[in-house]
Length: 148
Image 1 (cartoon, rainbow, N blue to C red):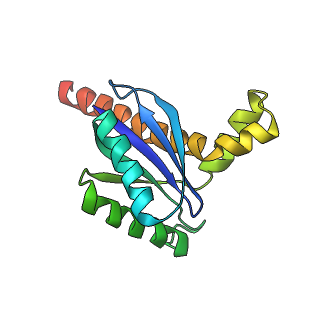
Image 2 (image 1 turned 180 degrees about the vertical axis):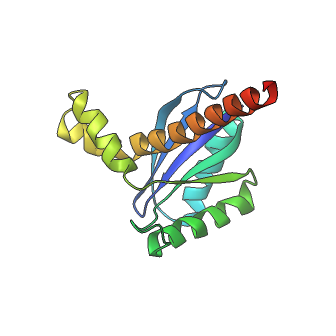
Image 3 (image 1 turned 60 degrees about the horizontal axis):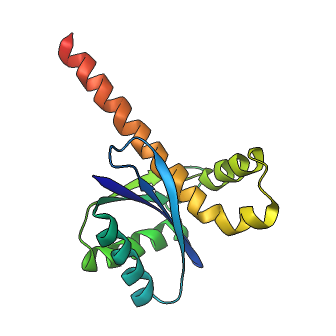
């Protein structure tokens, strides 16, 4: 059961995919935004191709945790996507995910031009990995609680 992670922006949508076991996230692609119809069709095609069971979407909250215009844009985008691809969406606080992705690529010695081309895909990977780690931790906690 695969999940697709999304980093939705005004120019691109970074996409990541989980492994079948839901342990790790890998970068998949970056969709260059054209218009809503083409953008949504491209994402639906990816979900269909990979038999995704959920979207894990970065929600760009303000630093104080409130919803700003960018978060509203992402929620509107996902509402439109849900109309043509009705799989559940889980929102993850994406504050600083791009910075974390940037630092990871810098630590790996990636050139600046390559980092710029991959930042959205890598941010989607960070968002998805946060979700996968949280789900695994919660499952482990539930198992421990059940044996106590």
